[in-house]
Every structure is written in C-alpha cells, then in structure tokens.
Image (cartoon, rainbow, N blue to C red; front, side, top):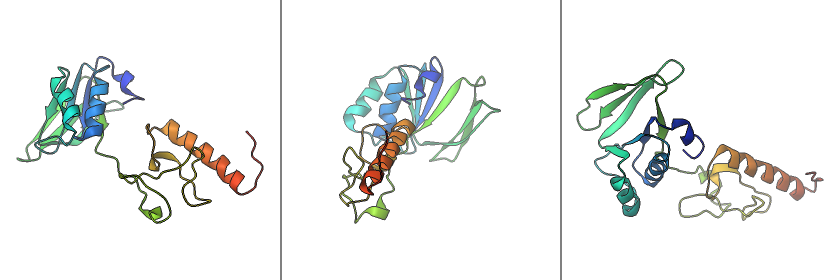
Amino acid sequence: ATCDGMFYRGKRVFVIGGGNSAAEEALFLTKFADKVTMVVRKDHMRAQAAVQSQVDKSDKIDVMFNSKVVSVSGDGLLESITFENTVTGEQTTQKFEKGSFGVFVFVGRVPASELVRDLVERDSSGYVITDDHMATATPGLYAAGDIRQKALRQIITAASDGAIAATSVAGFLGQPVDG
C-alpha cells in the first residue's frame, strides 16, 4: 500500500485480511481510495483492539466478514471480483468499470527462517536479527530482505539489504570492496 496506494486515488480498494497488517494498510489506503473494503474470512478481525477501533471509526472502511476472494478478472485491468461467503458457500460477483478498483492482500507475514533457526537469533515473530551490515550472530552468515527484522518490507529495501550484504560478504572473505 505504501508503494502503490497513490495509484488508487479516488478508486475502490479491497484489502484481504483481518489482522494488524491488513487493518493498518486499510487505514493507510483511506488517504487515497474513495472506499476501502476489508475482506475477512472469519466473523471477527484478529487486529489489536486499538487498530480495530480505528477501522470501526473510519467512514471510508467497510468490513465483509465471513468472506474470501475466489477470483478477480479483467483484460489487462481488473473489472470484477468474486467473493464466497465462508459460512454459506454462496458466491457473488461485483463488476466495476475497468481499472476502477484494486486488491491488496495482507494475510500475514511469516518469515521463512526455519532453515537457519539454529544458526541465527530471531525475534518473537521469527524474523532474523542482523546488524547494519546484515551480519547474523553466526560469523560469515548474512541475511537480507524480508526475512530480517526491519520496519519496512518493500522490494526497494530488500534490494538495498542485498547490496549491503554482498559488500559485507566480500569484506568478510577478504575481497576488495569498491563502492
């Protein structure tokens, strides 16, 4: 949402998920979108009470409980979205003017750090803890991208992490570092 939200100025946006990430992103998207609809599989949200309260107070956010997205379709740009009621199984399709809506998926963040669980320190969510050079607690082992603990998870920050890690690895291996 922080990267693409502005492209949906004056449009309709659907946010898939009911946790903190989804609720926070839905709130952020209200700065741009005319209407934000959260699509939540269960009959309740899992977001923290304070965040959920903000969602409840927003006149730009609707919540569809007991719902999931079955499909989206369009030719080049989105034109329709199909939902399924998770209780009844009933499906409904909403059609829109081509390109007049967007879908953002925030169904949680689970870092794939199990492979190195015995080699690194991880936070309570499983993200790898590194220093500013991307070094982990194991000498010679570096982590970059969304697997590491950080405030912002975007392609640009992952690429930056990769550049830093590559330079750090070269230095660790005794290779000349240029740049």
